[in-house]
Image (tube, rainbow, N blue to C red):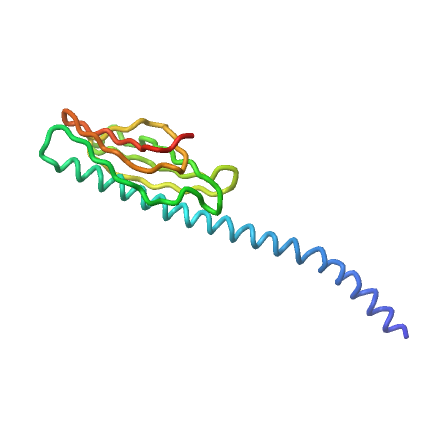
Amino acid sequence: MAHVTIEYMILVPVLIMQIFLFPFVATTIMNTWTDQQRTLELQEIAGHLGSSVQQLYFTINRASDETGCLTSTLDTPSTVDNHFYNISLWDVSNPSSSAKVMKLTLNIIGESGESSSLITLGNNAAWQDGVTFRSNVTSISATKSSGSILLSFEGGSS
């Protein structure tokens, strides 16, 4: 009969520990998985936006006209996992370089998740440095005038 008591003395605390430990571990694993899924989706969106900006810039840059405007409609989702995200534009160009580099950063509002993309453009590219847009941006516009190309996002507000 002493063996049953010893078994209960060992197994009851182990079972109680499992009752508290299993939900904690499951929650931690699911939170990690959710954060990684958001980050992957943001990376895909950042790559798509970067490619769209670069294609629009190179298209209008090759045009022979001195002035003009091109607009590209975006088909990016406005939410990631039912959360809006911010899009920020930064000039991270090296002053000694002849090219301009735009850093496009995406952050989920109120949750963890961030991604960025670097876009190499020519030295005649211009955009508002440090500007932030909400994820409801509908289009990108490139305006060429007197050799300079101004890039802007339209339809989003922060």
